[in-house]
Length: 606
Image (cartoon, rainbow, N blue to C red):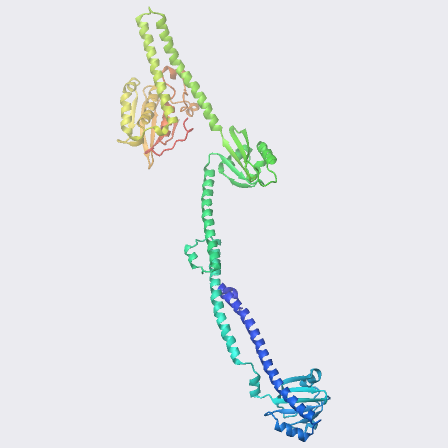
């Protein structure tokens, strides 16, 4: 059998039932108490009336200095209350007179009667509804009094019939009055508990939604009753909404911070003062594994790495038991490991949490080295033509009688060196512009087919001198969005490079062999002498020469292929060189159809 539980009822009903139960319990007890008091009062009032009659009988006996049965019978008959029974009893319990039964000598001893015992003990007493054994079992209301002068107990009694019972009952009007009052109070209780219960129920629903992180309807504020609990509930919801908005804002800022840390170009690790991980990005893990030469399964083990011992000692010295410090504390160090250079910085925050940041400065150092090397190379490359020009001009100046033929030769050589110097400065300017201000380079729609055609027309004499055949497989009106000058430099430098170094009686093939949604794929190959394998990876380095003496003799600047690579990368593509299986060199490169959105990081340029 299933037990009914009040827990399944709404709070307002449970509150109402609880209040009703307590109220009805009190009301029933109070009504019963009052009912008994009223009944007792009526019984005492009837007892008082009978006691007055007992006193009259006693006064009659006292006036007559005793009584006889005949005289007593006459007195009782004369002064009798209807249905009244009068009994005179000795203190020993012996009945000496009873007006309703003349055979009183056969009565049992009345010493055990309740009213008789009370009369002997307290002077008077009464009992209700006891059956009379001497009068055919009829029930009576007895009232007795003990009169010490005559040592008699005078007892009067009325039959306890329906009329007397009704008389002794409490007034029914009182009960109806109490019932109506209780009913009104129940209605009032219901209204107040319903309002109170509605507030608590709404607050409970709000708490459950807040706990499950469900959306809270703003109209819920209008549903609370206009009472103190309703006002408190509204204030709680308003505070919650402010906290929720603040939490949402903090969550967004936290996600932004985490995203920033994860995409940062430095390794970042944040830890509690107990050295437990709070947040670690991928670069931090990679750098730490590189420094430790191990694959760490737990980030906390970084404090066991010997290379990080200075940071561990710094933390041990500065993180104490206090909860806060006045200002941040910092420590920096440098580590060289596995051909890479790292700078590490540890910051202890005011709450004793700390951050360790790791920066890989290998590339920065390499760039600094390359810049130094580039400066040296530029100085070296400029020195040769300047020295040549200076030497020829000094010879002319110092020898005024030099033959005109020799002077013309010296001037022609100076002019050739000045042209070489001009080309070198032009190429350096192009590379510098791509390095320093790529966003300033103009972009437009460029017809590659026309550019290649113009270049071949410009170098037609050189091609004819070395008996070079050109095969061009580029679709008509092939266009890209980019910089016309740089796209020209790609195909012109590759063509000049092939004419200068590939040899004679060769074939050059220029083709666009594939395209997709974003890129064109190009091949520039020749059937010449090729390049030794050990030089392929360095062809695009600035001022790198496979045959330094021959290259300078032919007038090259050493920057042509570097310009090609940077121009390709500027247009969002890649390029590599390889030797063909049947002889010759091939350059394979890609170009974005629209390089407007191409992004080139500083340092990608070789």
